[in-house]
Image 1 (tube, rainbow, N blue to C red):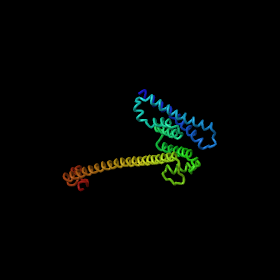
Image 2: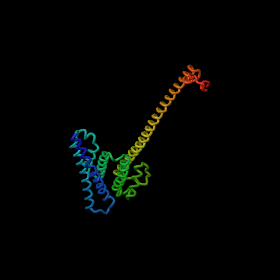
Image 3: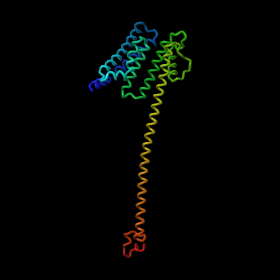
Image 4: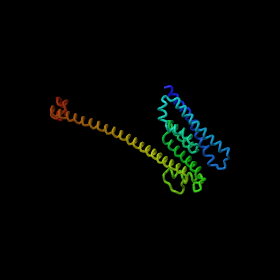
Amino acid sequence: MKQQTAQARWEQVTQRPLLALAVVFAVAYALPIVDRSAGHVLTAACTMTEWAVWGSFALDYLVRLTVAPRRREFVRTHWIDLCAVVLPLLQPLRLLRLVATLMLVGRRARMASQIRLTTYVVGTVIGLLMFGSLAVLSVERDSPNGNIRTLGDALWWSFTTMTTVGYGDHAPTTGLGRMIAVGLMLSGIALLGVVTANIATWFIARFEKDDVEERRQTEAIGMLTEEVRALRAEVAALREGVGAGGGGRSPALAGCRCAHPCRRS
């Protein structure tokens, strides 16, 4: 229990700082791509910042692994985190560091209960659009046959690719650019499925709630109907008893001997 508490405490304390580092990574990744006039010193500083952010996420994974009560189970259930940590070491490409950071940020964001699904989906869409645009611009801008030359072209291409529209006015020509396109298309389909499933779940829950209310009202109406039938049966029984014992008059009036008109009624 103490190890579980330590793990939960660590994740709670480091959640916001890691998200802030992810924003720093985004700035460091985007600056050399957007500003082509950036010098060698600035580009090197941005690269070092990207590696530092990745190192922070790697350290976070190692700490969580250390304090986990069952380390093998932790590795098995957090294999995406492990892949994101190991991926940039296989080949030192900026795109791999980008993918790894996005994966780690997404995993940590899903741990936060206060982040609703809609907010997570919107944030994921915006992040994929921006990072996908920057990534494809960085690999296609200098391609001899490329037609994605500006950030506006890259944003338009990313949007049409994620929505699986694909107008064809802009398309990647390099192998790495096409890999980015495949990733954006799969991500767009997955997010569309999440949104559709969320909407369907909301409608199903709403219909089930209405069905429960309708069944409750039907049961209440049935109970009232049975009570009315029972009351009618009691009234009919009283009428038969009155008719058999008093000649059509009530028992109280049947025994009356006064000169009141009730004798004649």
